[in-house]
Length: 275
Ligand SMILES: [Fe+2]
Ligand SMILES: [Fe+2]
Image: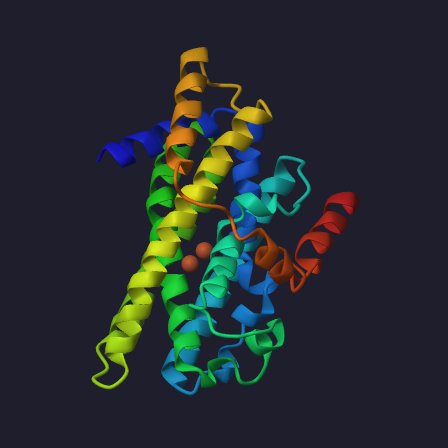
């Protein structure tokens, strides 16, 4: 409950500070289009189970729409759609963290993008759990953001209202898939062990990138709506959130970023230029 109140307070400060809110829109645009930015994540054709393959395709179709809505929100505000600093990019950092910890299996990037990606059962499981965990993290934030936007940012509210309806469904389907794999009598015990490590790493990196985000807001003077005492409290919170949480796996994250479809951002810049 306290965590929710703190998150609501931070989101209120962000939404009432125009440049901070734009940064948040940029971050979410990148997250919604994650499967375009990182092709290793977008290989549903390699999944044997036709029902699961269809669910994955439906999910990406929804995320395509979400990315378009967020891009539109930035365009309407006159902002280009550009990548955010790697240390704030939670999904990228999460993928890199899983790879470094060998939770995601592959010695080279080629192994993570080849036709053999899902011949290792663990890689399919990790991708589903990756979606499950990141959707769960996003859904709480989306609900808070949507409710705050209702009176403060009607355009953003209209977008979030649509997005939240889809995300509620995504959480449900990926949670089911992850638990179905973990209930398998043969492979379940091993996957449950993987899940424990994966949840721990996801929590660490969520705290780490969350702390980086707050420090970034403060260091760049983006929280213009915050009172002096609130800025001091945000700094304390940022320090506490990042304490003992290790480092962001920057080297692997940079390597994964080389796979990024640059067009995801560039195409939009052209739209902005000609608009
Ligand atoms: Fe989404
Ligand atoms: Fe989603």
